[in-house]
Image 1 (tube, helix red, strand yellow):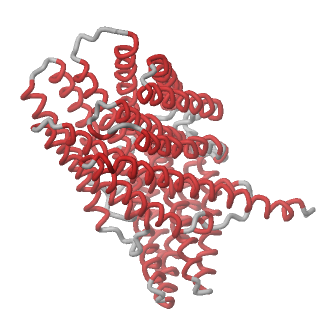
Image 2 (image 1 turned 45 degrees about the vertical axis):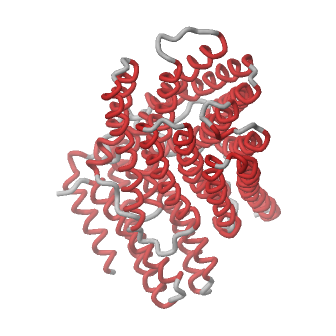
Image 3 (image 1 turned 90 degrees about the vertical axis):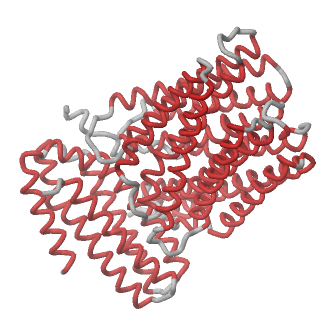
Length: 151
Length: 434
């Protein structure tokens, strides 16, 4: 069984690959291919956010009693990234290559600085506080990620 | 872990105000401009690494441009990567910025004009500025939670700070030797070599590597660095530097040379591995900063080759060539390309956090001026390399360098203007009663 950090970090990279595929196709002005790839990325990203917001963060908050700590910040960043994703989707609908490239660059950096905080701080903190329920939580998280990826 | 300690620098309010890192990024290019001016007006600056002009240029570059950007960026990245919260971040930024600015200027001015008091005063101010930053960094790191992570970046950032401390102490000793007649137990060139090696590898190289462990795989979407490599690289470099310094101090020439070659090889391995990973990026449209970062790794490798030749063949031009390639081509290129990502993103982040509708990064800083400035960077590197062999080209390289850093500054100021315009455009909207 993998740890929380391994599972969630692996999913970050999977999302990155979906993102890169959409960016590649949009750069080639293959808009239908890019739309499909961006849909896959949006599903993966939302599945990841939902898994965290519905399973991981509540477990962390229950174990530590911190509801205004790091998870609060991560939820706010999820909101910012959902907004950024909407702007990326709007650029794609408008088939505006420049706008798409700019919004993609912005979302990528936003996403990666968020991932850095989670991978270096939050996930290790979760592992420290949730050691007793780690296996159970990993099963739940894997199911949430898998189910929503294919939805 | 106590609950108080369990809330590291993740809060929005922990992001230091934009002006904290930005002041370093905006004053850094001024040192590049000054380095260009020294090349224009100095005599045969690049004929040897011991000319007053060369010493001034190296310090304008390393203790000016590079140190400014690195200290500014660390205040931003330590909270994110290591959960370290700086105490009183604005005061620390203000104090360390002024001290580093005056210190590097005094030191370089002292070298260029042969003014001993400026040299010593500059060195003391510089070391004081570095100490303020290091003590604040140390406090923040001691307060940060110790977490078990798979990434070696947080540990290696700490090791780079050790490298900075050693470089600063050796530099101060050298300034006091040159300026105040402090007598050294070792020959002066030996201590100069140690100072340079610790600055290049212990501080700059280790910081670049620690940053790359994170930046290359995540932002350029490449495979990660192998864990075995990142586990051993920085501690290996540090241990190698300690042993090499001892061998140098004890004048065991062969051991020193073997360790020197080993250190060069270890750094080359980092540059080669980075180039290899970057060639496997999943991003299909490598932009100018990405290409510039690869170019910087190439320049580092060429610099290492020159350094290796210098180990066996001690002619003046090899060490100057190595310095040009590593400092301007390697660190200069990598730092410029990172600045082009960091500054627009920080502007975007601060607008977004203030609830302002932020233009995307490429609207804050379009690709074209970035691409043009980075092309000029390559042209300057070429001119510098030629000037090492044809000294008459020195002033031309200097003029191009003034343009290069002036343009870098102009591009960064552009972001600031776009940031201000976005805020002003948003104000009437926010002033409207809801």
